[in-house]
Image (cartoon, rainbow, N blue to C red; front, side, top):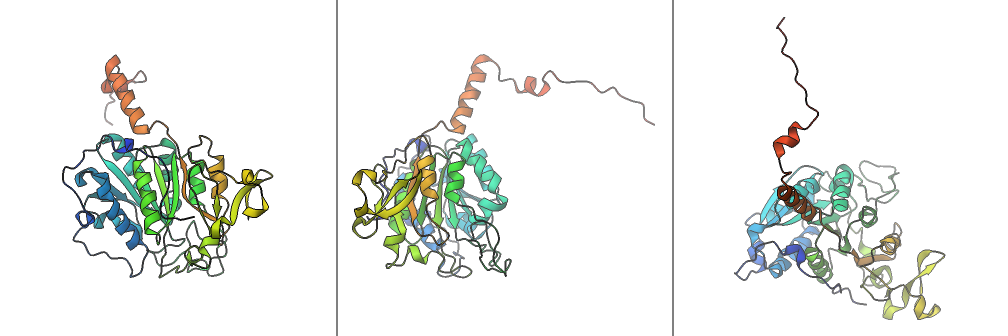
Length: 359
């Protein structure tokens, strides 16, 4: 099965309120005059090119697109995008972006973050943005290491990982970003890989079209401090046997000529040879299921060595967005005359502190 694209019916309701441009755009229109200062060979270059390449498809005015980042190598992203951008505080990009998206429905708001920035100091902000379903798109670059601070273990580093901060091997059990997002009831969750430009672009396209919080985990190679972390998913000799492409409403088969498949056994998902089971036993992927249990089970398939890693859209469901609900609540308050901020601040629990004579 090809990884060239993600098959998922989407619309552009998420961008309905964002002004469109009347001038045709190209990738070069989204490039700045800033020198791109990542290490040569870094996977961030591919992600940057993919984003710059597909944004013209959205037909949005550049001044109505905002990229918000935290701290880390990935957080240089706003400097290289010819849009508005904020290089914000460590771990707080989702919080800042949430306020911006909720107050400015005329903007397409993006968050660019890394596994350390998003899942360590920023973990709390990330899960609350996901559960609130604010209309924004989060790109989480996962290289399983701290790159900017030069090679310490991160929240996604595997157990036993030897780094500068864990010379005898990491003892921490790593986060699975997709599992975290699904557990937080995110309405759109996907995973892709930096080296697969076509698949990366198709996932970004689906995420941009989603109304609500979309999280895209991107496996990104840090060739300086964690080189080759995802080679088993890129090597032609192992790629087909390790990667599981997810396609909505299609049986989950992979490997050479679909020789492997995913089935249920005693309530769990497992991988077996396709010719060893009846076709009806093969699990059919449903990214639009209200219950995220299947998506969560799929996210738990891979082990630490990344064998049997699903990529694509795990979940894409519709739920009212926080910003839309907030706007409706404000409109209702104005209609009923309850939108008196002064009265709200004064409230009923007020008291007067009597003046006292100075000593």
